[in-house]
Length: 212
Image 1 (cartoon, rainbow, N blue to C red):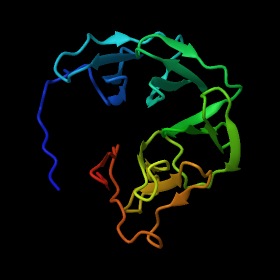
Image 2 (image 1 turned 90 degrees about the vertical axis):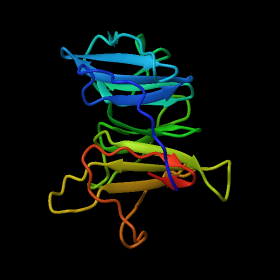
Image 3 (image 1 turned 60 degrees about the vertical axis):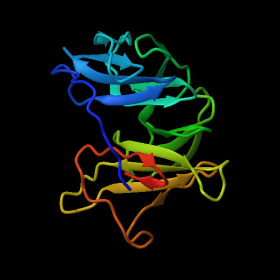
Image 4 (image 1 turned 30 degrees about the horizontal axis):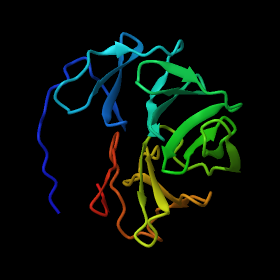
């Protein structure tokens, strides 16, 4: 398999530790500028809007930004916010306090609440609480991807990769879930002979039936 890449534009020195989100045929790139969260966007990868601060009144954790159902979601002060353009945000009244926003697929978003329970929602407002997550489950913002199963196009697999905090380990922490279930499975050597090496700030994508 070969993936060919073309360099389109240099976003400049102001874009540091970016988080990219694709929504409504736009690419949004979030970053921190002057202690505020800012965003730039493009439809073609060549012409970008000027970097503009988002209007969440408290500092947001832009590393949690993700797309679901055509909108962008992000955590700020343990609360969930939603936007359609990346700049203007509205607090979602969920009744939940979040410690992490983990992933999304076609049918739901998933996260961790402040009591370390796995939670999920199919409408962003009402969240169902499940079991307390194990100690080695990746709670810090990481990278995730979802894709249709080869055995059933109506079902998706969510793959979540987080930062491995165990210094002596040589692999990253990877967990997986089928979207109609609420149980997560660790991708360990026992069930997967090929493990991902330990990377800093990894990003995973699904392309041509493979993970990269």
